[in-house]
Amino acid sequence: MSHLVSQQAPVARLIRIAEVERTTGLKRASIYRHMAAGTFPASIKLSPACTAWSEAEVQAWIAQRIAASREAA
Image (cartoon, rainbow, N blue to C red; front, side):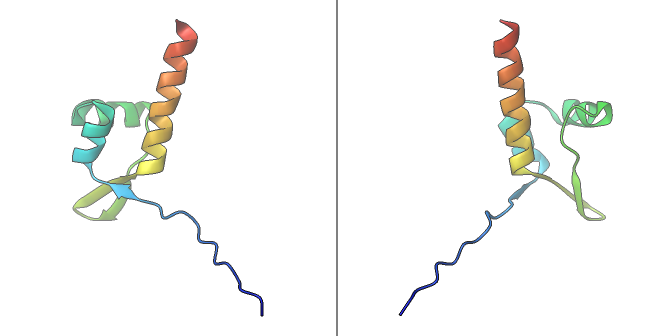
């Protein structure tokens, strides 16, 4: 009898502004300035009063910043 292995896609995690600030070291105003400039991942509107970001997109942004700073050095 064969057993099927269930392959699940990774769960996308959404994070709120406080965690984005902790993760990036940026303050709220800087995050929104980067978003307006198109240099930071767009937020996701969950409800009229609730905004979040994709944790994977924020982590990818951090990785890009690290890579860019290493190339410039």
